[in-house]
Image 1 (tube, rainbow, N blue to C red):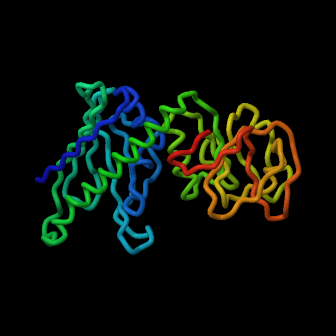
Image 2: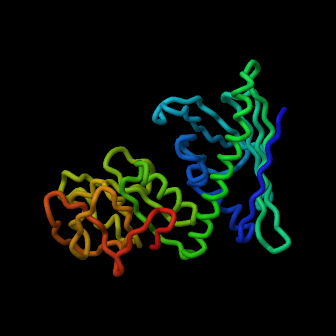
Length: 284
């Protein structure tokens, strides 16, 4: 059996760092792009018996091919540790312990301790690639977690946030980012609802969005490229056309209708101070 250990420190209280891992979206945020495609996350966080399903992506397949991995949480102690084991997947065995402690300077230390066994008969050239792959994956997790914690430390007030295009590449990461900060995140969907708090609307129907659905919403985010359509008629000021490459924008939820500008204009909910920024540094 092989062992891999990764230590990382964060300038945030241990209870905050642990709580981040319990919130919706944590696994999505820690899944390295091009390596892991996360499935639905457990509804009750890290409790023993809950399972997380994901796919390991094979390079060169555009994220469409890869073995399925099912991890089950087997141990949990608030603020101290949690553990998961592979119950189905490509390895012979895998046990991952996440250990949380305080450093002498008051920071949080996370020790990721992994015991694993490779399948019998695996070529040596492939086996030698496992540890470098693990170092890269856990290095990504450390950078992502540090960025997210720093972002949430700057935006502590909980908000009610609606995200359009929530199932897309950008939208899914955005929902996970905001959920990790303890915000009440609601998806604006056109098809089948993903949850009882989703907001349904139709871009083809001028009456497809009920303004009452946004009554208690603080911020609406429309990633550039999502089809906001006639939803823009509920904004407070004139919408702006946005290029395909523009990053997401965020703004105050609207209170009265207005007319859309341009047949192909993509609509943004305006803020008092309009803001655009990449997901990792978005300032709402």
